[in-house]
Length: 342
Image 1 (cartoon, one colour):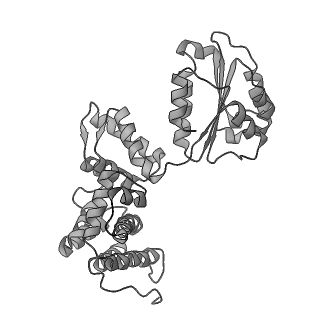
Image 2: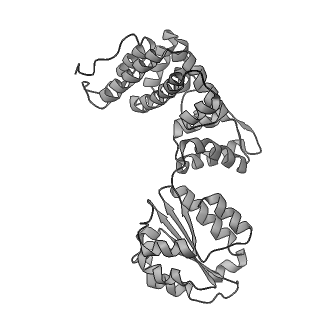
Image 3: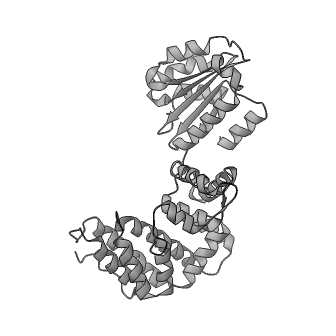
């Protein structure tokens, strides 16, 4: 089940004796755990009837003992086990979960990976409790999550700036959420967040960054493309590897759209696994500027330079020279690279 279903059920007054929050997306587990911690008991009740434990410090027997105590000031007792994946004898909770104490709620936070679904304990939770499978969001769901989360933080961010944030920081919400929190200090009260704000956030130059580089490449402006590429390569900590990844995403999306031929925006969104109108329109515009053959060549050149950046036929040590070479091939993709040359 999802975190939205969990929140809705709690707000409607429906609770379960056991909550298993497990999976690779630690942020979702933390968010769900914090919500349960704040909602299951009143603030005054937490002193006596809420207990937060850590898996490395307890075992199954101790957890069960705490759950079998009677509540003192509240109608129920809440025991939250954080980092439950480190708990000795986690599977030994099965017997308790099959017959949980009616006046207690157990919350298990199992991070890093999903719990083994073959365990009898998992079957017990499935029967008597609530399971949150905290898997990373699909690519198409990241922008809606970012927009909704920003709104909840009283931040105003448009889809273009949201896409820029995802492209530069990544799809993991555990990385995106802290960056949104940083923006609340400068953009509270609904001040509009722009793409330049995102560029500033990640420490990029407003004039010499990957977005300006993509625009210059699309327009075919060789002088501007090479100038931006050279200035980017001179920035402290520059590496060609992230640039190749970003450009590969750009060209591969354009290739997908171009290969579809005349079709609907809905079909394009389905193919890109992202139905955002802004995202679809931006990719359509990029695809119009290239032929299918030139996009194929660009993708091949990016693959070549990805290998070179990792030591294939290139000694390394000069990412600036490698960047200029790559951009030259992307500006003039007149031939396919020879993969056997080195």
